[in-house]
Image (cartoon, rainbow, N blue to C red; front, side):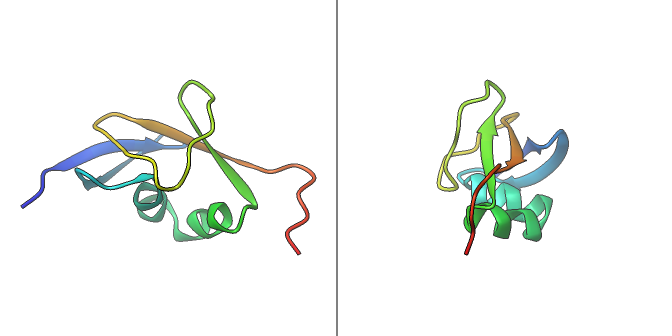
Length: 75
């Protein structure tokens, strides 16, 4: 069985299994936030402010933050 790890989404700790990705952390945090990121209405950045993709790896203690995309037409 895989080990569980703690990561942070928007400052809130969530627990996922080792080897899971950014998308899994977002789903654990809030499925609606994940949907917004998947649809391009929100962006995901790491603790240094760099953009990260939904398929990015998550390791123990990683932090990601979501922000609304400004001026994005989602039609």
